[in-house]
Image 1 (cartoon, rainbow, N blue to C red):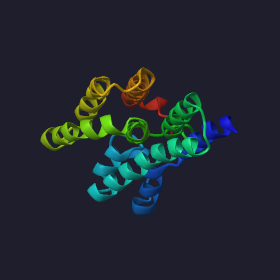
Image 2: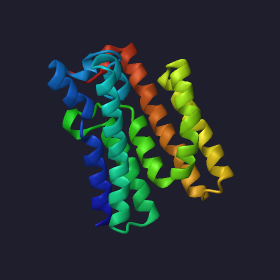
Image 3: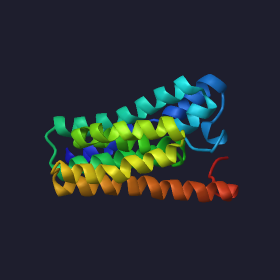
Image 4: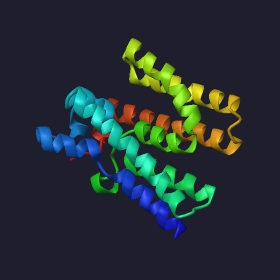
Length: 192
């Protein structure tokens, strides 16, 4: 049953939110629009502000759902964390779209919102202020993910959760790096 929760996390993550909205609203593959990313930021710019925010909320909900399901079935901490990572992997490399999806920031926020609620809620205030001031999602994500371990340490969050809260953004960063390289070399996008 435990590995089914990890697989279920991957399937939940694989739901291609921005792709579905792009097809419904514009009849386009969101990965062919804007920065080519299948995530909330690109949807915000290409499909409209309200749709981008809605996609962010749905993608955040994917992370929340995967962790809550694992907790509901009494999975041990390691399986809960693997289910979370699988959800990000599903979002970033969805089986339904040839393994080319988003970057996983919103899903990561959802996962950490359940596992490290108090620290996320404290960190979210300066994060939103930076977003409103600079209007730069990458800088905003950096503020969130860099300050989160410090706030977590201050709150005496268990070390395993702090480490996990560092590992997930590293996965997001690696995905961002790989996607940026694909944009530089469009022949590697994998979209036909």
